[in-house]
Amino acid sequence: MKYPSVLPFSDVLPKLEHFDAIIDVRSPAEFAEDHLPGAINCPVLDDAQRVQVGTMYKTISAFEAKKLGAALVAKNIAHHIEHRFLSYPQDWKPLVYCWRGGNRSGAMALIFARIGWPVTQLEGGYKAYRNHVNTELAVVPQSFNFNVLCGPTGSGKSRLLQTLASQGAQVLDLEKLAAHRGSVLGDLPTSPQPSQKRFESLLWELLRKFDTKRPVFVEAESKKIGKLRVPDLLMEKMRSSPCTAVELSISNRVDLLTQEYPHFVTDPALLNTQLDFLTHLHGKEKITQWHQLALSGRTPELVDELLRKHYDPGYLQSIRRNFILLDQANSLSLQDISDDTFQRAARQLNEMTTSS
Image (cartoon, rainbow, N blue to C red; front, side, top):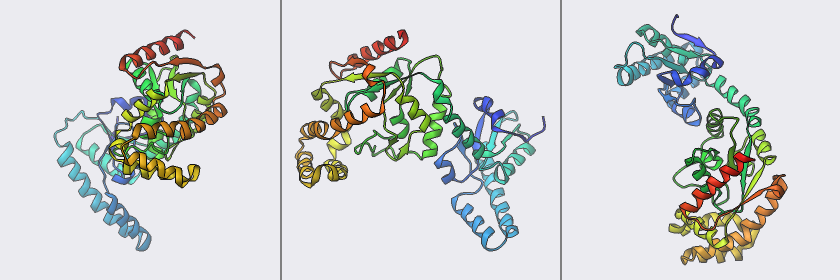
């Protein structure tokens, strides 16, 4: 075979796990927004250089921009070879791509081929990959049998998903992929949300590994998780799927939520900042009362009020309107929030779902 070989994504996909490296040569900002599964970033133009060359292309001439770009690309590729790839053997097999499979990836692929590495360049680049993800997410969810965990805030749905996954079940944890708990208090201070494109890539990467003959457990979600939107077909499939109603006493829900949101317990000012977003629903007087509960360390009392007066009423309206099989749901009652209880509940749910 002559190298560099240039292959479309349809030919590359079955081989993704067999490349020794998947190299994204786009700028760090492009890479951060989204990239192929397992890719590493070796930019041939960094963010500032990409802007510099692009500006020159528009304001001076394409020829001058290409000269500068070639010089920068050559230096950067030399740096990557010297500092990252110099020790690699002759049979090292990389896949290289850029935005559309053009100049940037072509430059690196050509040099790699001249060295003697069996390099493959992705035809169409990231854009081809992105088109594939979009197409798949508009079709693939229909292939799965979902079991949707329903239950009010703090009833243990997320923890139950984690336990199911630890027991080998197929779990689609949308809140984990979105780095958000799915409510006004759902921001995770140490984990910013990914871009919409990255979220969809993570979703596609997970779904493509699932077995369509086995159930997939997922939590009932709204169309948006924080700033991210759940793909339409997946949302439609979830809303028409069988449900399991997870039940937990309100006192246990309060305990669970104080465990799972420690950043709000230790930083009441942060909690109060988020509570301000509820002013239009509950009025300044009620929000001020909740502020005082947070500042005085009466977090369990505050959580109890939030559940009874904010979360539960809104949840009941939304869940009945959107999940059409809720009235036929199996009930799964949790007696407490111990690990043993969640382990037993996960086994019971697996058995219920497998036998149905």
